[in-house]
Image (tube, rainbow, N blue to C red; front, side, top):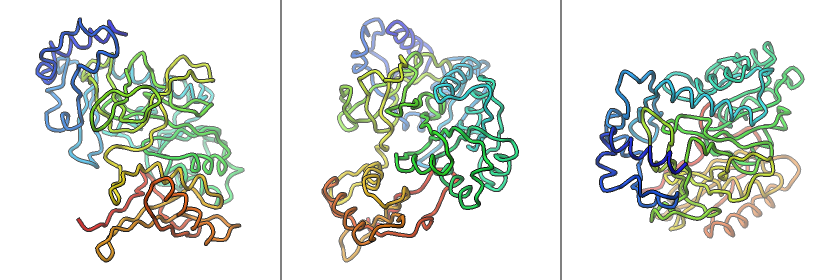
Length: 405
């Protein structure tokens, strides 16, 4: 791996306009261990946004066969280029991810994420086809048709966001169609989703679900996935180097400590990225997985550094809401956080859905006490009937901040 890293640094310094400047003074041959990565500057999403993609190219333009782009929901879209080998490598990683989730050539895999510039749809399709699975390339939305094809084609694997997975699961349950579907696996990603939602989707559909990891800047989805043990996400260390850093100081953190995930692409040809700050929050898991896979793991993603809520001086990860509601009996998986200002004071109201069987006042009290103990600040909780909060075909919008600036 070290020799491969040295070659990457040499190639970047020689061919990539951005890295010629950024790596000035860095001697690749002196990078002897992974701990030496700390001497190499980070690459950020702002670097990619502020410059044309040509400034990051390590190959002549005629070797590029495709581009993809981020959605641009948090700023200017980032364009990423791919060579034929980049696409092949990504396909191998995606196929490896699907295989770890138990997908085989006998499966029929229904793909609900978008196609086009977004990486998810075509990424899932390429990996599934490489495994020899039958692909049903539905794309996003049109729930009526999704369910119709699920039944007609006897779909065995569904892919998409966890939000849409839950929406489909509830709709199938509401219509009494559970006995007419043949699903056995669900593979979901692109957002933070907790164990409570995982269990609800699995119970409603009778499946096992898997959390797939990826981002457009680092190929796309499929650079990691959780296995049947469901204790962290395996990532493909023959293609990628993962570090975890303190998001404020940039200091590299030891395994087990939570921070921002940083990724270096060892084999990417068109647009290699060195120490790319993903903004995703997680940790490296030091122990081998009991599933027997030789590939290392990170924790499931807890949130993003740009999604952290600052409330009354306290920084709160979105995953804390998932954690709190998962610990209280009688609460469903869905929630919505409202931040607002009243009489000059910032307030927080967390709306959650209620299951039948417990006194709502007792549940509210338990939620509020548990949240204050874990977060150190007070939030009010409001219990709503199941199915009240909005459901999403793409990523769920859970934080609504209407505070006065």
